[in-house]
Length: 155
Picture 1: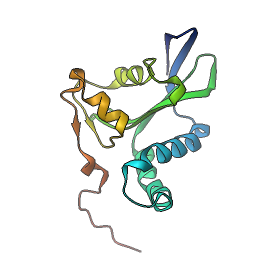
Picture 2: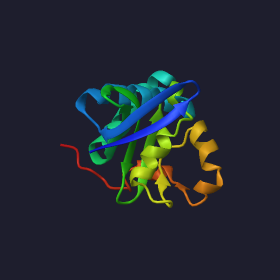
Picture 3: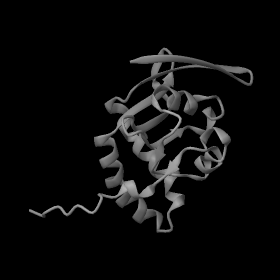
């Protein structure tokens, strides 16, 4: 699956495709998610970086991941979306700072997400975006991060 988008950006023009995640994208997804989300937690950064990897493991193992990348150079990643499109739940969306405000995140959302959806992670950028009228029906539910009270036997 590849969808192509174009957006002028100042004097530069970027074309991008949206494709499914590939194995070589995973290190970037972990590092960018951890770095960009760490400041939302009131814990030592080293603790967050070590422990939150397990949460990301769960989402990457049970979600669909779309990647926005440079057209004709799919190794150049602009951003990504981690979601459950059936529910619909957006777990995380990230766009590199240099590529923001070009419509990349919007194109990731529009591809698969209905106007009413739930998010599990909220950064300062997400708060600003979600205050817009277009997102009035979005629900923030961080409790979906947790295992719904199920007890797993330890072997």
